[in-house]
Amino acid sequence: MNFNECPTCIYGLEMCMGIRILTIFKRKYQNTKKMKRRNFNHTLIKGLGGAAVLGTMPLSCAMKKAEGKKLGIALVGLGNYSTYQLAPALQQTECCYLAGIVTGTPAKATRWASQYNIPAGNIYNYETFDNIIDNEEIDVVYVVLPNSMHAEYSIRAARAGKHVICEKPMAINVEECDAIIKACESAGVKLGMGYRLHSEPYTRQIKAYVKEKTFGKTLYVSADAAYVSRGNPDQWRLDTKLSGGGALMNMGVYAIQSAVYSCGMNPVSVTAQEFSTRPEYFKETDETITAQFEFPEGVVGNIMTSHNASANRLYASCSKGWMELQPANSYGPLRGNTSQGPISFAHESQQKLQMDDFARHILEGAENRAPGEMGKRDLLIIEAIYDSIAGAGKKVNLDLGSMGLV
Ligand code: NAD
Image (cartoon, rainbow, N blue to C red; front, top):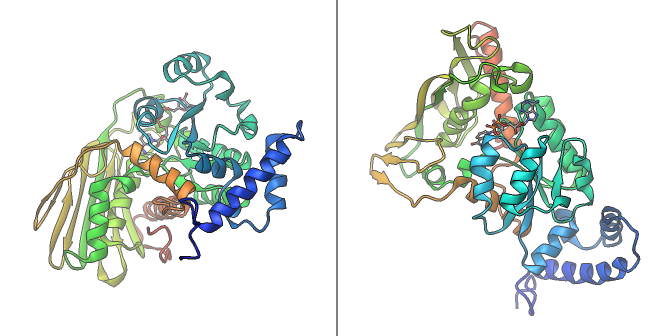
């Protein structure tokens, strides 16, 4: 017999023992009413210091796993991404569901409650948000707000004992990324980035080719992520206080990610340039940025990101061939080609795959495909690019080691 397996259930022995002890304790404590749920959980967790499972999984999640229930996700910020991508994806997810919402607009609360059958007790506004601490139906808080609000709401969610998914870019500077990571570590909750492409099959195939050296060693990568912005000039993406920056903070993250995963290494230096042709529209934020990366082992790369051009592509030249995705970062289906022929996968919602992957990370200890360190790594690269531009294209060295490489 494998000593890690429980003979009577599908869980590992450690998990099974943990769940059984939890069940006994929970019954006992539930009879001692008036204890706030969070206090109950904390007391319980303290009393069960030996149950290793608790170190990595809050009680409510352990109970849901034991009962075969889905994890509850609350979306914070009901803008375009939540409305048109995340909420529909949460109707298809296998391991999590749309349990709650946080919105400052009462009319949206009413509409979403009726469309998605969300109980009144699971609807919060920005003032009542911290009360989510008492809501055991919500396991994960997904922060889908303007970039400058990611840190505050991710930290408040962690302090409420909720696992956190933070949208990209992780925050508007590295200090905020550190604060989010620290808050999640202190609270013992999981942190994932909204980097949907790491759960997407074409991207995963390119990463596998790199790992397996199917096309030999990557020598050169080129990645573009750009669209033309002509919308409302008062939108938050054009306001540095809310966005932290322009094309680079928005689409640039995808180009950086493509360059990194196409060679499987972090850059060791960057030089960058900024171009502006519509300063009357892009009053505060960058319009177009190009950057050149040096990676270890002599690998080089170029990225371009813009709010004034359309581009969506990654190309990697390797010692024994090449790999290309075009489109490389839209919601799919993506398209892939290589020197050995096209690659093709059935399309599934990337957001569905991403949120299920994160739920499995919580429930089963599956790999966190986009951990907080990856978000922080990208902010370090973004800051180096802005530094280079501020220094008239000077070379900025980076010392990232293997940070965020998954
Ligand atoms: P959006 O403008 O459509 O929605 C923003 C939401 O935040 C709105 O509901 C708005 O009411 C709310 N909000 C709260 N306080 C606000 C304030 N002070 N100013 C402006 N809005 C405020 O934006 P979006 O496209 O949904 O983007 C939200 C986040 O999701 C951003 O961080 C963005 O980068 C990210 N995003 C990620 C992807 C992806 O593919 N991973 C795609 C789109 C957006």
